[in-house]
Image 1: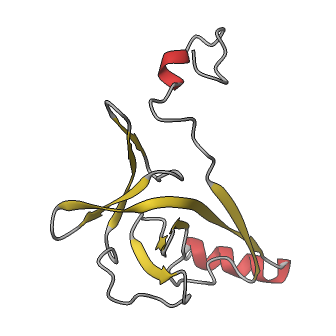
Image 2: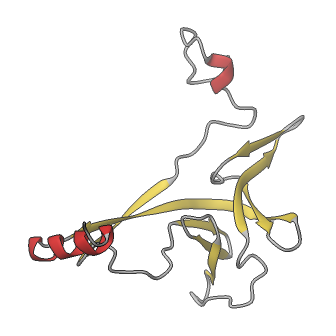
Amino acid sequence: MGEGISADDDDFEADATAVSFPPFVEVELVYETGTAGMDQSTWRAIEIWTRNRIYSVDWKMKCVAVTDRKTDARVPNHTFLGCILSGGQRQASESIEISYPCPRPGYEAVFEHPKRRGFMTTSQVERVVMRLRVLTVPHEHLSPTWKKLTGPGD
């Protein structure tokens, strides 16, 4: 029986993994003050860190930026830009373990190229960071914002 698994757990087999128990995805809270819906630019919802690159993915799982970790510069023509994050994979001795919608540290991230209809993988993932936006809206900005968001009334 694997370490950390209770013999009393009826779902033991369903919860066991062939490769290892998963490291956790990190969560970064990004605090802002303003009005709801104030920033319409692309949000880097998930960052996937490898040894050399950081792949930034939006909430639609589309790769929106690739950053070189040594120079902290964007890589404007990277092959993965516009690709869709499918999850992650890791080879075991007699199987392959897949995680989705995100890879885990120790896995390769898997991206689907929308035009080529094929899959591509990164090198081994070191970190996965989910970036959650926490917005504080002052009361004086709350009412007009909700009216704008919900549209004109009858």
